[in-house]
Length: 196
Ligand code: HEM
Image 1 (spheres, rainbow, N blue to C red):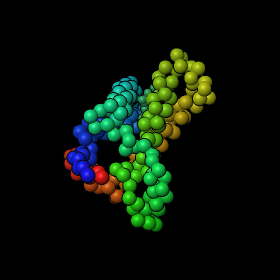
Image 2: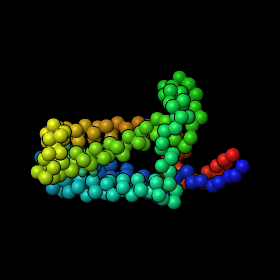
Image 3: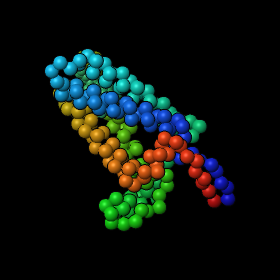
Image 4: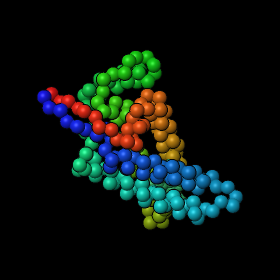
């Protein structure tokens, strides 16, 4: 039997998480106003902010992806679905519906894994549709594969609502079911893990 010290949320992951929060906040707010501007709004500033944070989102995403496979505290395996997750998915849903006990899971439960895998996939789609809007002439053929520029715009806008929905559920669950984890996301915390 061995025991190892493991950080719940190593510093790199925490920094990346909070950078993501800032990026999404700015992209959501600026995107909202690009879609629904009001009279007298400094639109070039709003658009430029959107462009700055879109690059920060992409850079942070690439670095985080690389780190999860090759970093000192690589954690890609905590997000992968395993056979245990298949068994605990339904009990986990029942738990969230107040119909059962919390099943025994790994660091992340199966529904969390789904959300944490969905978010970067959604971000890639958002980046692709965003870049089509950014360079509509150069990427015209890509726009056509989405059904035209208007469809791309609608897609980009709808995804904003999907992000808002997923992040709202994330916040609700952090504050109701895992408040301790909220603090760990600031301060880390050392966890003692035993393996047999
Ligand atoms: C890498 C990611 C992203 C890129 C490359 C990108 C790029 C763009 C571009 C070029 C525009 C059009 C600006 C204009 O016409 O003036 C736009 C609009 C918009 N963006 Fe993004 N964006 C990204 C991420 C996001 C995210 C994460 C959100 C929301 C959470 C978002 C929400 C919006 C919204 C709501 C609009 C307005 C769409 C409309 O006109 O109806 N964007 N984005």
